[in-house]
Image 1 (cartoon, rainbow, N blue to C red):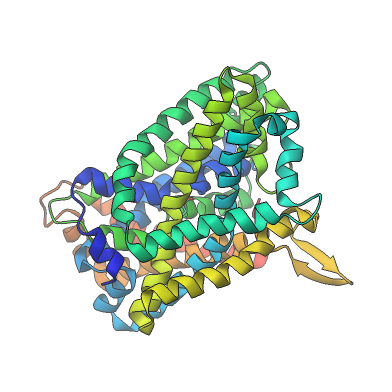
Image 2 (cartoon, rainbow, N blue to C red):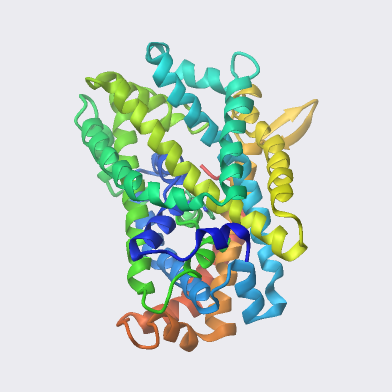
Length: 462
Ligand code: TRP
């Protein structure tokens, strides 16, 4: 067991677990990624597909991860090793996934810090031209020293510090207070955005279900987003559930975490898309909705600067509780499997991922090309940002989830899993036969289709 894990101890309460799992799940994925995907994939049509994906596949995989974690009382790698030595290599794949996600997660996390400071010191400059302010941070007018280097470095340093010191305990206590605050603020902002003059079109777009807008790609995007948003596919939820006791009801916990996470994504969607219509601010690149578009909303609210400050502070907090969970997964593997020293590992891993991450922000604007490829002297390269998301959301996370379901469904067996899920029959699980079917057949087949389609249909991740 790693020091952080020991330091963090057992979850003191049921709420502590839910908050930690929800803290990992609720992050940039919900507020920064989700609205853009909904916007690009048909609004209301995408919401329906997304909710179906979460309800059918997301919950299935989450319960599978919870069951593995509590059964073995080990972190992701240890859990696999204990149940079947042959499969610990999957842990290595999870490390790669987390590493790639963190490369860009820390960049965007850094942008939240930049915006906190902007709202403290120069909100008038942001309001003067929100899109220009955002693009400027990304480097359209010159090297983005702040957007790509300084603030991401601060974000990463904070994440690493928390991981290497094991102060995650304090984070958990803070979550109890800040997560509900985030929830309330999002609802308030959503109501404000939906009632802005001109927002009606955006609301209608998000509520309109148009089957003709649904295509194969909608499913690919929705499932990849669901895994990312629920923190599934790299064993984070295995580790978190390993601190639970038989007293805890895994089935209801699965429901609560999935519902909370999805509500946050929906609130963000209904906050940002109507705001795009009302303010006309469509930054067009680099997932700027959460940054540029919302500035237009804050501008329109009395005391908007305070709300803006609060919003970016909470977004920062949501991002860091997620980045901690990702870095912890990566570091734990290297420490436990490869016998590396913990603090050194944190520093080395962080340095490498930081250097790669810089190119993420650069590729958003400095190279100033939108699309999958950019070309240099006639040679084509994938745009790093899109490529990273493609690798993680389309291939690696689904693969991790596929493996989890196959492992639970076929190798360990659904009878054992259901016994664990119900705490040996203590809790009622009326959907057990359906879940068994999903874990064994429906989920792995659906996920496999997505992986294969992703491999052959190319890399559109919008
Ligand atoms: N779920 C987080 C978000 O929505 C990101 C995240 C945290 C994650 N831990 C993860 C994604 C593990 C995949 C796997 O922002």
